[in-house]
Image (tube, rainbow, N blue to C red; front, side, top):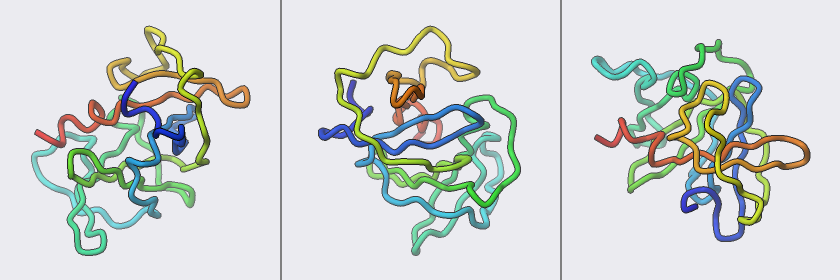
Length: 148
């Protein structure tokens, strides 16, 4: 279950639509407010473009589009979660970044065959936290197209 949680079980929980997702806190470099994104031609629709983040050109993915959800207007709570994967920083647009929580590894279950509109390939596991279903993402698979 690598890539789900850190050794101490800490994950960042964020929201897309009315579903909650999580990625390991040690993969997250920063959480930024939405900013101007420069479109890059001939990229998949879910790659919104790039931003200049403290002097580093960072590609930005709209996770809603990546998962086949409808695009949403930017709101005050929209965030860009900056993640690091294989020495590359990528920004993930999410509806809101909610919490940092601890999830013991024994509470993580295999994902069901289907979770909403999201391809199960992007999911490492699911867990219940305070009566909420939290989907643990496989960051490597979510970012695959960007890394090639």
